[in-house]
Image (tube, rainbow, N blue to C red):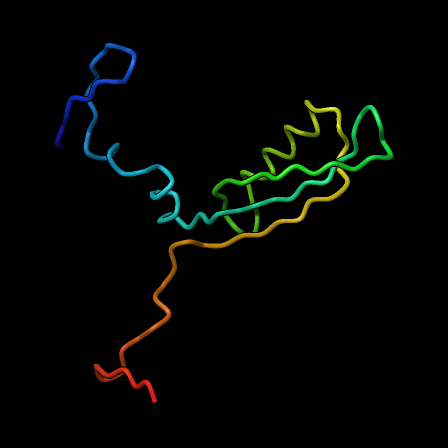
Length: 110
């Protein structure tokens, strides 16, 4: 396995990294089937319950179960005071099969 030495900025220490650490964590997650998930969360203000406020959450997650979003929402329910009103979720896989295929090696425009 290939190793390289990297210097962490501002820390003054040297560390070794193997070649697997060179690829982006987010890119590896996309290859595993994760897609970009955005949740628009409406919640009631604890000090003014009649007032709704919005919070936008975004991370890579797996559709349709959304384990990362559910973990965040469970954290919200357990630790934060603002009761949830509604959650709207949008999800898009960023790496997907090509949508254009060559038929007999030709592309016809007209």
